[in-house]
Image (cartoon, rainbow, N blue to C red):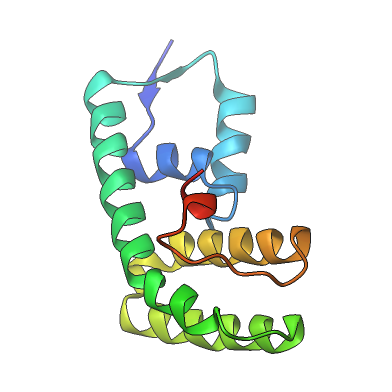
Amino acid sequence: MKHFSLDTNLIIALINNRDRLHHSSMKIIKNESSTCVLCRSAIKESKKIAREKIARAVSNSIEIIIDIQTMKDPDKIEKELKKSFHKLIKKDPGLKNFYDYLHHKIIMYIEKFGGKVPSPISVEFIR
């Protein structure tokens, strides 16, 4: 029986359901789990890359969160977020999946809390 190892990009795609390879990765795991091997080195590399990309995406997005804090209209906030994240993706397309994920999470937060955007340095935001 032949075995194969999942590469870093497929491991990261398993974690991020907004990644363009997520469905392919899930399909591979479901259909080929008996022949699929996860190497320790691939897992370590995936963790390192994911942390680095998430850190870059979050640090680049902080300015967006600060800019929308004063806005009251949820529709205006969503429009500005979309425009701002589009600019970030254009600047650094390698982080597109992470920006999409952050954008989605921010929109979910705003919907949950009625358009109130927390200060990035406030205690509420950290919790």
